[in-house]
Length: 382
Image (cartoon, rainbow, N blue to C red):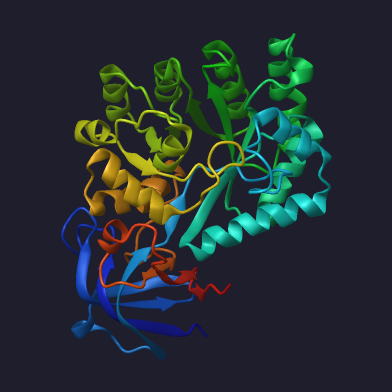
């Protein structure tokens, strides 16, 4: 029989359900929560909490939904932090050269760090193998490392051996490479613009993935990110990332669509890109997700605590709106109704802060604020 657990001593509970507390994050003060069989079955004020089989006192700490990081690329053959910052070709070479055990050890290390930082649901993409064999290896490695959502990103860049025939490489992506990852990924992603793939090539890639039943994702790269945004909205992609340099028309397109704008404030800081128009997107009514973009080339951090703090400082968001975008926004970008909130029926993914309020994420930037993490009702340990 299922065992129920009452969590009390919660100074504030972020539910992300406006029916349970003030918008936008459905905040309940002096709260309690009941978990049963890995799911949330009751939330409300502590004074009204039902009996449960066991009780845990959180000592006046704030409880948030676990972070949902919808945009990373962490399956690769490099040892982060060793040597100079790598570029994409050297990362591809290292990934192809790494054996399966080394790839898995690296991916598991990254996922463990994310989990200990409060990221209870994480997506990642392939894209550093760029052959049928290596892309399949990357997809299987990501699953074995505990990533719940995996995207095929064979259309990340044209590898050196295919530079003279980019259209021929797109044929490989849409044919043998896509066949190789069939059954091991749930999404197809494409880098549209810049030195990657033009709109026509990108549409070919997405159409091929759609025929396989994969969900669609887009990376809208400079110098014309608007092309990627327009394509993402047109094909009904779940999310579009790399949203810097958007025009007012691009913002309006996203606001009138179901495509989630995935913003990457730590990556923007690391690369020196101009900040994305986060405030303008939200004011226009677009759905926004915050993600880390953790990857070996341009952003080595998976800290969603830092992502939230920078979103507030860079774009003038309220802490509550930033928390919402890093939880419910990420869930929307992955089309996952079970995570990113803590209403009854949600998966019991909890991020307990060593602070009485979510405001500490902004007021104490860089401090180790994660007290404990619960994923699917089970406490996470180092």
